[in-house]
Amino acid sequence: MVQTTPSATAAAEHGHEHGEGEGKHGHGHGAGPHDGTLADWGGGKYHVEFTVSHDKQEATVYVLGSDEKSPSPIKTEKILLSIGDPELQADLLPVPLEGETDGLSSRFVGKHEKLGIVQEYAGTMTAEIEGTPYTGEFKEEAHDHK
Image 1 (tube, rainbow, N blue to C red):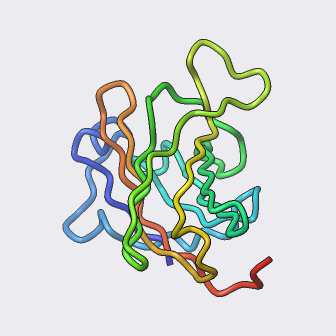
Image 2 (cartoon, helix red, strand yellow):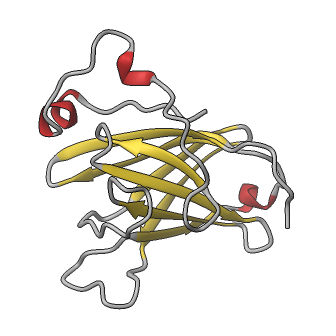
């Protein structure tokens, strides 16, 4: 189950306010195009896909559009990845895909030694885009680890 926590500003940007309790609801997102776990940013304006390579101790987050498939390049310095167990925070830095220019990127990569622990992760992915903060909560479901 993927939960979201869009900011009030983000709610205003996507055209409607969420009723009480709606800000943290599951969407039943499936796996993303990179077989990662999806989270919602800003009521569906963006989706973010969390992937991890345990061997490389590396996390990659892809910023996707409302269709949950197409890359949606953004201009931000970093995405902050926060995981509760094991407790870790990592700055994921832009690594633009081919054709992404002008400081825009839809791929963000970061390393942390605790990402080498083979387990399902849960946490948040946070960034600021054009002055608006976005936070998406995610929880990996059990799968075959590679």
